[in-house]
Structures are given as C-alpha cells and as structure tokens.
Length: 153
Image 1 (spheres, one colour):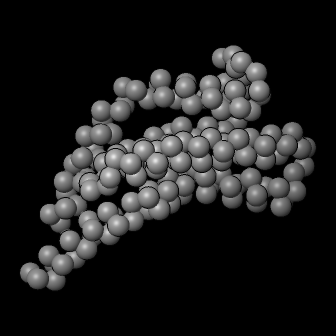
Image 2: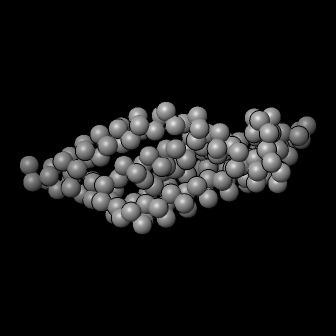
Image 3: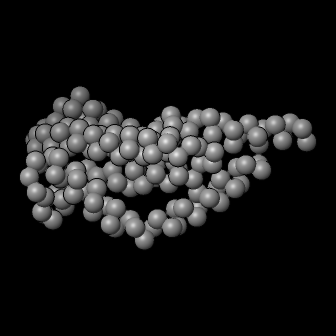
C-alpha cells in the first residue's frame, strides 16, 4: 500500500495536468492519422470523417507510462514512441476494416466479428496491455510491496 497510493496520486496529478492539452493532442493525432490514411494534406472535414480515433486511448497509455515510478527515462521514451506508432497503426488498420464494413449493405457475421473484435482490443485493451508490457517490473513492484506489507501485518 505504501507504493500503490503514491502511484495513484501521481496518476491523478498527471491526468489532471494533461487535460488542458487534450484538444490539441486530439487534433494533432487526427491530423497525423488523416495524413497517413489519405496520403494528402488533411482538411478539417477529412479529419472529422475518420471513423476511428484512438487518441483518448493513447492518452490513457501515456498517463499510465508517465505515472509509473522507477522506470528509466530511456524506457519511457521507447514506450511512448512505440505506443504512438502502434496506436496510429491500429487506427489505420481499423479504418481499413471499418470503411468496407460501413459501406457493405449486409455485412457478413465474419466481417462484423473482425470489426468489433478489433475495436474492443484496440479501443479498450491496448492501452493497458502496452502499459503491462513496458512497465511489468514496476507494476509488479507496486503490488509485491503491498502484498509483503499485508503478509507481515
């Protein structure tokens, strides 16, 4: 508990500090995604027409990776760059899957399963899976410290 509460407090503070930057972060993310998707200079209409946007999920990952204590700066930077690239790739891939699904009058069950399955994985699980992959030792330390204190009590 000694390590977990400071982590949660740090997580809350970092989350609150980044809230004013969310609109800028969201627009920048959509700009890059539209640029990659269309291979032209994106307009506001193009960015608004994107059917899938994972910038909020990337925000979740960034806040988690910045809040975890005891991680080297180099590993954080690698995690952030990898996370940004992976989120943009998943959104690009989701756009490639979702657009045909939206244009199909009677989509097949397989098409629906792939589209919604990918949506769940990329939308809800990816931030936490990436965080676990990059900060496993630090997360383990948070809970091991709490468990050893409880066992000794």
